[in-house]
Image (cartoon, rainbow, N blue to C red; front, side, top):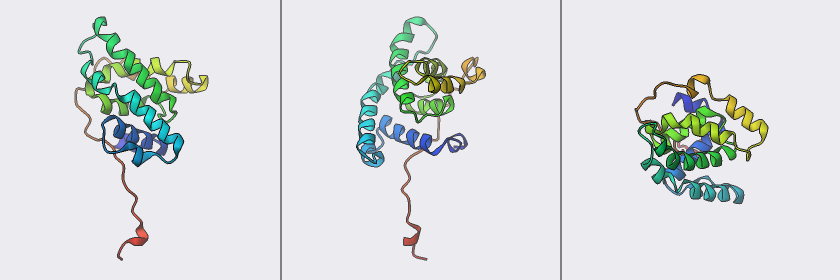
Length: 167
């Protein structure tokens, strides 16, 4: 929760929206679209996220190269979409989102997918530089990862009109 609170407002909003789309939590289009451009972005995200179930089923349990391509290719494509939306501020926000979308078993693969997606030419060179500089050497070369599944999944919270309260 503390990590999520450290992200900017736009990043928090995008993570919540992405979790709604990726985990099928309600009507993301109704909840999140503020205009036709955002509605189109949510529809595109839903099409990209259609691969999530297959991705979850193909997370490699070892580093055998025969298992890498069926998992990494769609993960890099999905990651490239999310990074191209310009709402994930760096590796920390990306990891936070993808641990929840795919699960803890994806953790060892996230640094590679992030670096691959962040270096693709669809991003402006300055954005690529900022994203690639956001991943620490420790995160990129970690010798081990926790198997513990995330427990905090941020959601949409309706605003309450404080002037309408009965006091």
